[in-house]
Length: 17
Image (cartoon, rainbow, N blue to C red; front, side, top):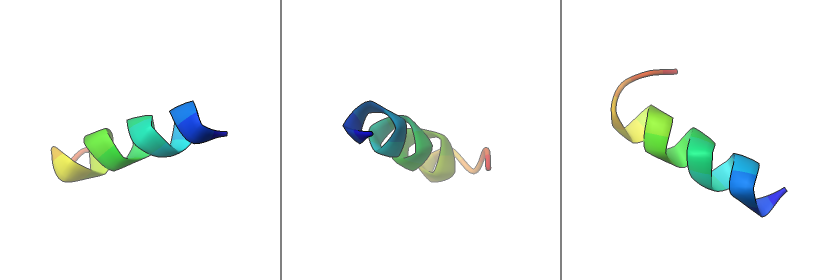
């Protein structure tokens, strides 16, 4: 799931795991 991976990356980048 590309969308999930992108969202996860964004959230992780914001420090929100």
